[in-house]
Amino acid sequence: MKLRGFRVELGEIGASLARCDGVREAAVLAREDAPGEQRLVAYYVAEPGAAVEASALRRHMQAQLPEHMVPAAYVRLEHLPLTPNGKLDRRALPAPAADAYARRRYVAPQGDVETMLAELWQDLLGVERVGRHDDFFELGGHSLLAMSLMARMDELGLSADVRVLFTQPTLAGLAAEVEPMEIVL
Image 1 (cartoon, one colour):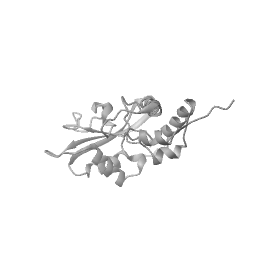
Image 2 (cartoon, one colour):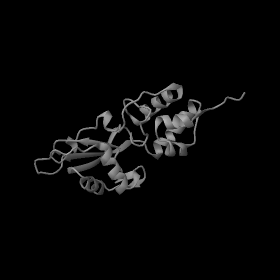
Image 3 (tube, helix red, strand yellow):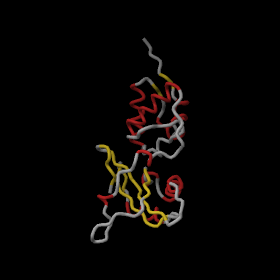
Image 4 (cartoon, helix red, strand yellow):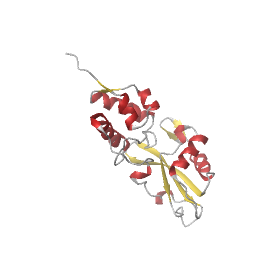
């Protein structure tokens, strides 16, 4: 399938996820929870007694796959839903909760710039809240959304080069690099 212009092999992503320590079963699908915005979501069943953290799974996936094939959210299930024929029932897989995208302990935005950026991220990424240490890409952001973010920032009078987002992907990091645009009359 194609996702944001890249060829994506869901089976390859699922196989990589299944090779993670502590993962017994895995499945990956592209969900369109917001119109026109597909995101990769990883579903996994952990081995009995295994403490599998989504952040560890993400790190493993980043080491194994190109960034465009790394799932945006990780959902732990007790078992993967099956059809009466014993195949994966993709329609029965739940939508990820808003916190399935967040990876860091929440610390509220500080200052006007961080607050404005947090509101933009919430709107663009479809997440409930964004903290100072949240990473744009871990919350489901990608290069096309980065360009949309820059355009929206420009509308609010905030200026930053899109490359800054790739080097400073946290809310606080980006806010520190953003400069209010001066209005020249």
